[in-house]
Amino acid sequence: MAYKLPINWRETIKEQEASGKSVGSFCKEKGIRKNTFYFNRKKIRESGFIEIKKSACEKTAEPVIVKWRGYTVILGKGFCKETLNEVLNILEERQCL
Image: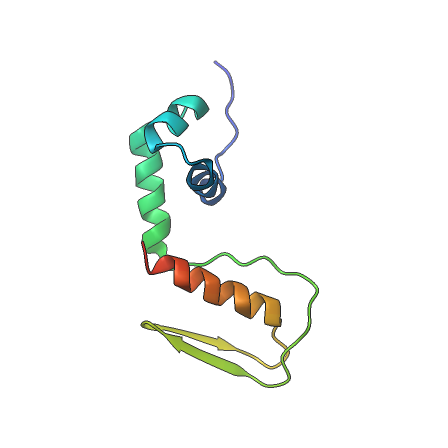
């Protein structure tokens, strides 16, 4: 029996969405069971956690509190402006979930 590496579901879901393929064809191509894909996608969407990658960037001079569509994001002084933009983009995307 061949060993399979663990799947990074967040990346796999992003890859499927970017592919333009149906979940069925994407899963068939990747050797993933459709119900497993749907289960993990639902679990991630309901988790409330948002993954943000750190990068070198310009920092905010003051703390920032963002309240938007039921979300509250509190960012301390020196928070990365590019990451703030990424957070807002993610929140915008989540309204469709």
